[in-house]
Image (cartoon, rainbow, N blue to C red; front, side, top):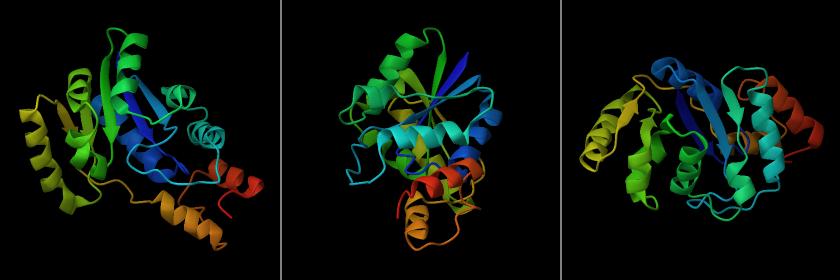
Length: 198
């Protein structure tokens, strides 16, 4: 079985996240993608009015009814700073024998060698990166070659995915602007009904 971990703040999850998960599933023939919202992202401690449970709810709504996509609360249950190496260790115990993949965006892919215990990440999972746009591909390929010298196995999408920013979505909601093209419909409805990000 090929199992991927796709972690992030998902504050909120948006259509770019969904497209990214679908693109890697297709490219790699993934059997299962675990959507893993962080409890506290170590690299960006920030205040948010949205609870971890609400971020989990939005992730579930984004992938509702889609076979092969599971929302996993492993980091939220663990609490504390969400270190990827710890989550991968736990997943490797939960899914023994599975080939593990770690899905990241361009920024994360470019800095992953600076994360806590990157050698454990490289030992446990294939690191997958996606360019923001076609101009980024050369940079990601150069970084992949560098990571390979550190013992990592890497995969890169050969095309960018729609660029959406959770920050932009929060700002648009706060200003009363439309976000319907940026988030799955059920996520947009959840945000409206609960008055999130206002």
